[in-house]
Image 1 (cartoon, protein in one colour):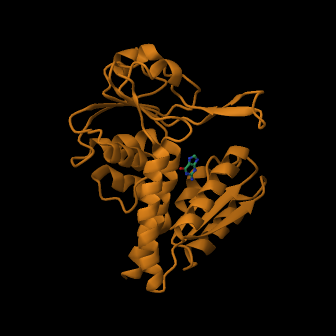
Image 2 (tube, helix red, strand yellow):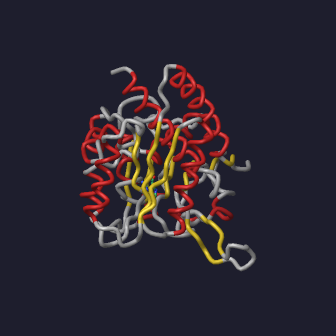
Length: 294
Ligand code: GUN
């Protein structure tokens, strides 16, 4: 039977519609949720992501501003901006788009965020809270994957979820989400990474395989189990002269060859990416709701 193509764009639209209703309710009480996005340098992919996040905010009625800083911004200047935004009541969420230019210490910059405005869930206090499931915010991509599985009816309870990639932004927090006791979690989780020996032994036993490696088409058909569900987090630019931009986007999964073997798969683009943005909006809304109840 042909694989189901999981429509992340549609699910994200559903989440956005729900967020928009809540935003209107808050606005009626005099509170407009606000998101500050900080973009340092001129990485073209990061510029696209930040623009998409800002457009999505507009769509649901969240106020957003992009703070663009030059490539050679000093660490203390960036931290000063974050501290100003921490104290600015118009912003309920602040995100620092990653990666940052090499001369900046990512960790000390993230730590300068007010954890109550850290809608990307990257501050160590929010990451730490993920361990016992008491987090204020859930990280965008992992919770976007969870929401996608939930809305499409792919259960995780008792399943073997295999995650390829151990990044702080996807792999590690995804593992923490899916091992929690609770609905749409409660999975047996394996995390594979560059140190993993015999990768296929793990990936071929995955009921749900999450590819978050950042390498085009690295998950080939021989690495996946027949009938499994494949979640492709990769967004890789590969040269393509037939495109006006000179590139096209491909995932970490060799979609054309994997699709015939599995029961469901997310496309790139239009799979996990839109869900990440939708969850960011949801976190910004939650943050604004929190301040309104204080
Ligand atoms: N870079 C790639 N993905 C993300 C994300 O979800 N948030 C931030 N801040 N940076 C990213």
